[in-house]
Amino acid sequence: MTKIYRARWVLPITDEPIRDGAVAVEGTRVAGVGPRREVSERFPSAEVIELGEAAVLPGFINCHTHLELTAMRGFLEPEEGDFFAWLRKVTASRNERMSADDLYVSAAWGAVEAARAGVTCVGDASDSAMMSMLALRDVGLRGVVFQESFGPDPRLAEQNFAKLKLKVDELREFQSELVRVGVSPHAPYTVCRPQLELISEFAISDRLPLMMHAAESEAEELFLREGTGRFADGLARRGIEWTPPRISPIQYLKQAGVLDTQPLLAHCIRVDVDDIETLRETGAKVAHCPKSNAKLGHGRAPFAKFLAKGVVVGLGSDSVASNNTCDIIEEARFAASIARSSENSFLKSSQMLAAATVEGARCLGLETRIGVLREGWQADLVVVGLNGAHQLPVYDPLTTLVFSSSGRDVLLTMIAGREVYRDQRVTGVDEERLRARMNEIAQKLN
Ligand SMILES: [Zn+2]
Figure 1: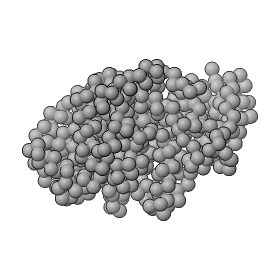
Figure 2 (figure 1 turned 90 degrees about the horizontal axis):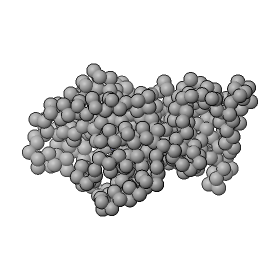
Figure 3 (figure 1 turned 180 degrees about the vertical axis):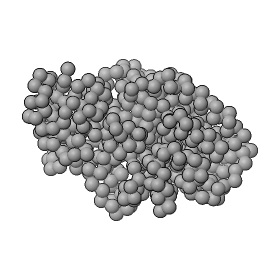
Figure 4 (figure 1 turned 120 degrees about the vertical axis):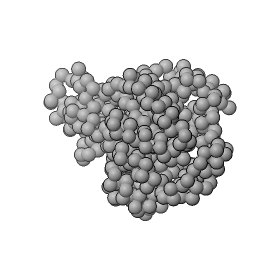
């Protein structure tokens, strides 16, 4: 059964906006995109859904999330000035105080928030990747779930790597058309070099996407360049020897083989001209997380420079523990504004929407299936209302979307032809049960 979604605007992203446009959906795919009369003539017996003053565009892609940490939204305000203390509290709370079901509920609530905000695909880094995969499945989102690996002690590298392999083997059973498995060595200061090398070789041999945090904080840079600071002190306290390579985080990851995997790197704030060139040359991609970076006081990544140099950049919310929302429209607006204020670079609304969609798809290796509205591509799309008091008048729908809208203006979210959010309801899960459980988890954590 073909359905035609008609709206004031259809925004294919890689082609010009279509006024009074339509998108035809058949099964899991887009069957046609164009002016409404043309689409109606091609599919005369299709059911027509009239959306009125709204824009239909490819679903938003959130390249960097930690859905399992959704229960920690607003939980770490006192620690936000001290990244080491922040990470320690996140890790201890997750490992010691949250049950497997708590982690599932937390991830599912994060997936609900994403679906409501028009996010159709996530790149989720998770210690409990299984729970994240189940959450995505139940809500109906697409995604790559990166199983995290930790281990700063080189003496335990083999053992920690074996654990990761075992987990990935289990997770493979849960892969589907929509959800894929990847690996994520957490960060340069939590994973030792031999373990980085092992994981990188594994990612290449097993064709697993790899995601890693990189060049995020001053503490990380001190750790690598000087062998000092909170991370170095932390290792010393645990009796782990550390000889700093005295190079930048990006060059260190190149040496350790991580960049051979064409990884997705979250943050990339502390990069110089050579690092940017290295990212471009190696085909590494960047998950730009400007709101999280600003909230934790880490600074900002040179987004406009990345684009000028041809580095692929998508947008990420990071966990809501440091954001505090998963809203890619808001992320795009924030990214555009700080590029203007700190890089003196006036990126266009069209570039911001590309980062939120097609470039995000490239970051996750899904660029031949999603990220644009095109015949034959997966029917992952979002409908955003354009008729609000905060939006009128609409001179240019791209500008209205980026600078006047938010995820709360989303009316419908579709993934692989399935409406996962419509009429204010996420259809795949019992939102009331999850809401009650989220409040229970918060009481337990507090
Ligand atoms: Zn992160």
